[in-house]
Length: 474
Ligand SMILES: Cc1ncc(COP(=O)(O)O)c(C=O)c1O
Image (tube, rainbow, N blue to C red):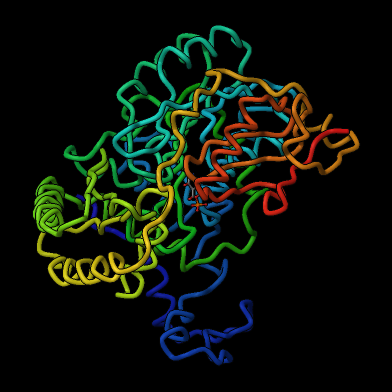
């Protein structure tokens, strides 16, 4: 097995040479910085494209070697390090496959970076609504039937964009069939696998979309691997993708001074996953199972397991996820997210022998729940998922360009029936956009909005829902 970490080793060699800096960055190996010493120690490695340190945008030496090891590890034709998160990977994959006015088929509950990419490119989205999962109370994947229908109806689509797994760690058994069908029709499948960089680590985890033949897969190494925030991967494993175009857009969209700290961290994360053994996977699963059992012994606490073994949902009946989050934070337990129903935990991707203080954390969780149970219960905590009878396949009536050119006005949302939305309204939960720009506002959508507001859902997007206003085309 390859034990190399080319970027980490290259940076270490460079540091040991006691070099004098007459170059950027201006902190001069951290010496001019007033940050605490621990920061300054790290800044020793925060260098730039100097001789021997290669260049992310034209890699020929250690960065190329490290990216080749990444491709070997994930079994791809070409893999890239990203220093702008999966956000930049999602932008690049859509830029590389679609142009203005091209049709693109998109799972509706996609991350905002997918919507931003479509808007920037000026492509015409066709949305496919996801299914609802009653166990996790979350929106999951699109069904094979709905995706096939979208592909049959829009055979001119230049790409299909799927999210796998969901933020909540749910996967889809149908993705393989979906990819195969798109390929039959000559359409590439781009997968936002931001939450699944660890899937390839061992066979005990869910398979990566790469296993099913996805053409481009973007992963946030920083989300589940031991990598620094923003550090991500983009993999291409396809004959129908032009790798040069991916390269071209990554050069445009990423900084010309990419952080070497992030690059080193990506090199290290690749090493971590490459050396991850089946026995490591068995170890974390066993540890997790023991912990789940111990947590379930805490009265009032409901523990929900999801497809991804390193994610877990916690609920306390009668209390919202936000209340539970607040109570946990009084005991210094910080969760990944809270929604109306629950909190989501991301467990550490342990290797055999790693210890994590699960027993102590259980005590803190128990204490937090005692505090929670002494506070008033929430009035409504269940998301109105039954209202999510979305039309499976939808296409905005107007393009982003048409919306941009038109006059707009802010109106109380109850007076917008039949108008065209120029607002994006994304309620959490369920994280499925209720309104996207260019869509017609229907009675059904307005009553869903009313219900969501009543449940205390939070909303992302461009709206003024605190004043009950949304923006529409004039
Ligand atoms: C599904 C999904 N895709 C993409 C992203 C963006 O990832 P990053 O933070 O690495 O830019 C996120 C971030 O939360 C996400 O949840």
